[in-house]
Every structure is written in structure tokens, then in C-alpha cells.
Image (tube, rainbow, N blue to C red):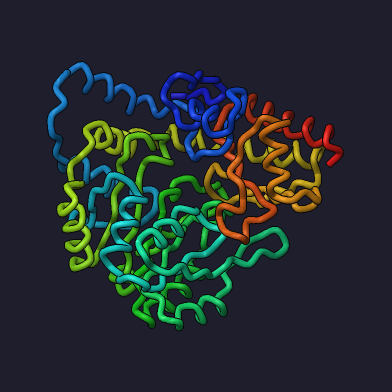
Length: 392
């Protein structure tokens, strides 16, 4: 079927963090939220219909994960990512970040070094410091409008005694899809030093048409044995509120240790609707996803054209994946706090400030474009008018 992504769906009064929390967070109910990473689109119809059918049953007791659940994940990974995984590798989790936090605490000790690549998803650093471990930064290089890995710095940092490396693949917020060559070079460096890699691949389905995602653990058997891959249908199909994720762990020792963590904290129980959503989305959501990504790419083109015409001093860091666009506003000559204040108070638009992703994000901001185009245009018009009034 053909989906209508131009439809504006009223999300106020739906207990939406993105929409209903703006007054408490930003002090103004008129703020247009283009920050938190969920979509303003309905999820695939097969998922919604499955919810309705299950709700009409009326009994919501404890739920198991059936063979069809695992088969849906296995077939999806094979079909979309050419990665052939086994049922026993799949471990349920109530979310990717809870899993990463538990992995850090279980597979490292106090004061151990854990490496990330800023500017990067800020809860990584929070999970590290809250667990009493040390953040080691391998900042990405930004040259000619594109980010890349600084392998010389990476080698030096790994040699300092890093225990765990949290890899963001594809990268949030800069939108890079790491190539097979980049990942192989990175993987060999980690293997040589016996570094455990947590590969956060939650955005792995949101790939633009000219790029290909390589699951990190698919590179080789040896690399897979030192890897925990974090996946979820949440970003792909707008299901984040269902708190359902799957860790794919080929190494049986790592797998048993991870499962024991969840059992020890009584977190191995399954969310009934999360299981239904995962299974139905992977079985029947492919057409929706393909249409959604085409729409998001068109939104990105619209955004780029608009900025080039009306606000040329703000540059789009061309994304290769995700619906989160990294904007470079340094040519405006406005410091980060002033830009944030201007956007909130004058433009009445909320973004995710770049500096929260690390000091390397200073002068950048992250914009969510997974919304109807009319909403995107409204946000851009608000930006333009506020900057004109401010003579920026």
C-alpha cells in the first residue's frame, strides 16, 4: 500500500515526550519540537492492525518470545543486511541504552577506560561516567564537510589500555555510514588489543539509497567473537515507546554473561506489544520503511535547498543515514548558547544542541527531519525569520 507521510498527526495530549514535554523543558508550549529522535509518522499498518487484534483479546499476561519472533529478526538481518545470524545469538533487552549500561558494568571494572568517537550520542558518555569508568575520546575528523575516523589517534588511545569501544554504526549525530574498509581497519586494531566492541546499530535500517550498511560483527568470525551488536526496530519503524531491543551476541561466553545480567536484575521479561511490533514490522513493514526513507531523503533535499537559498551560512553535513541532520552554523558568528537562545525564544524551535554530543559539537546542532514536509518548512521559516530579525 501507499503511505501518506505528508499527513499531519496531532501528537499533543498523547503523553509524547517530544511534544507534550516542551512547555516543561523549554518554558513555552508554542515550541516546535525538532529534537528528540522519534518520527511524526504513523508506524506500519500491519503493526497497528496486530496491536488492535491483540488488544481485543483482552488478556495481557506474561509473554514469551516465540519461534516466529526470532525468525522475523533472522530473516530481516539476512534480507536487509546480508548478515546470517542464529537464533541463539539473539538476546532480548528493554532497550539499547539499558543494555549498553549493563554491558559496561559487567564487562569492565571501576576506572577502566572506555572509548567513544565524539561528537557522538551523549548517553554513551553518561553511561560510562555513571558506572565509574573513564571516558576516552577518539574525536572524529571533520574536513571538507565530511567526518572520518582519525586512525592514528585511535591507535594511540587503544594502546593506552582501553577495555571497551562503543562504536556508533551508523553514526549519530553526524550521519556517517562507516564503510567495510573503515570498519575492518578499526576491527583489526581492536582485535590486536583484545578490546570488546559494543556496536550500536540502532539506525542500521535508515540508510540513504547510495550507501550500504555493514554490520560490524559480519566482518569476520574473529571480530564477531569480540562484539555485541545492539539492534532494535524502534528507530526504523517509530516504535521507541515500546522499549524493546535485541542484542546479537555470537560469542557464547559473552552471551551467557549478558543474559545473566538481565536475569539478575529481573529484566528478561518481555513487553507484549514490543514483541508483536518487532515481529510484524520485520515481517510486513518493508514497504513502509522503503517509502519512509524515500520521503526522508526528499526532506533532506528540501532542507538543503532551503538553507542554500535562505540561510546559506548554515551548512548541512550531508547525511548518509538516519533522519537526524547535523547542521553547521559556525559561519553565523553566533556562539552556541546564543544560537540556542535565539532558536528557542525567537524562532520557537527546539533542536538538540551540538555541544551536548561533546565539545567537538560546538557550533553545530542536530535537527530531526522525520516529519511532514509542511512541518519542516514551518520550522525552517521560523529559523529564517528569527535570524533575519537578529541580523545574523
